Length: 152
Image: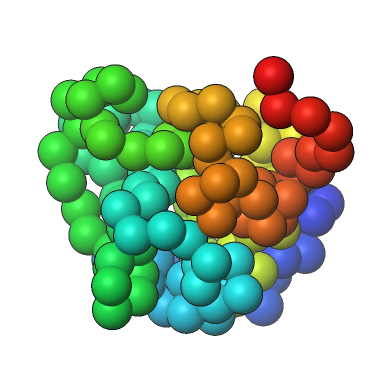
């Protein structure tokens, strides 16, 4: 665990006996979106961000923007292209444990630290300019993908 991730999860409540590869609960994922409303409010309807466990990629936890805001649910994961997601975050078990503990607080710090360390892989399944047009620019910045310049 990186020092940033350790600090971010140190004050978080312990997970309820979660096994390696377990995804966060949809309610916790929904609360995380509500806690970071400034990142989710600009999303276009239909934007999907998925989280999968690299050790057990049969299910994915999805944030999906809709008319009434963001929803969170677990769905089958049949592969990146079939997921319908704009972004898929694939986490190893150690980082997934960190994500579960940080979901109610400093989630984006933990995700960003996991991406930087290689424990979380961020797959952008659409071109960067399309993601930005769909309202994902602030969220991508929160994940550590700052971008300036023309989209080609």
